[in-house]
Image 1 (cartoon, one colour):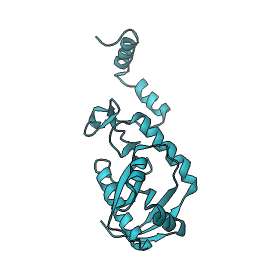
Image 2: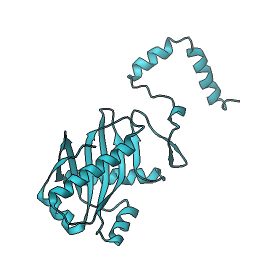
Image 3: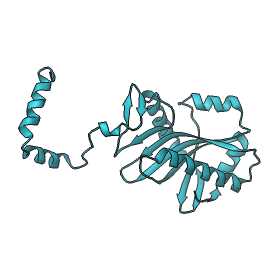
Image 4: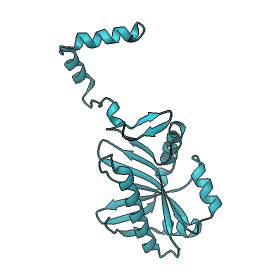
Length: 205
């Protein structure tokens, strides 16, 4: 992946030097959902390397843990991640990993071509925290938590199952009135209505 030229604001530099960790939010455009998690991990690691070069932070290395990936209809992709330097306190790191409701500052990474701008974004704090808590309430699988509004993932007993999206009916993004008109004029309308009546009366036998 392309190397990035990072520009980091003063607050971000100070926080990284003090805590040896950052909670970051990347806003970018997404790749197809089948590869997006691996792609997001690679992007986060590349951007993090660029950030560390800019702040001239002395470290033996770093790691990136993805928390959430959210894909929207507009091709916007939001990636929430923790950047940990190797020297970060192990107890602090464990506390961050195991607690979803910690009130932590968010540092946004805005990608523009081969450049990225990293800055403190107080407006994102509450929203990102609320999203994180919300995901944790129903997704009991490993992180990153993942959502794709165009191709929703399939969950079984609170765990995301990869490769089973074909079992879901594709979502029709047309307006409800357009969908109703097509169903009303369809030769299968009577059959569909019959199935609905069967379900209401006790289910399919």
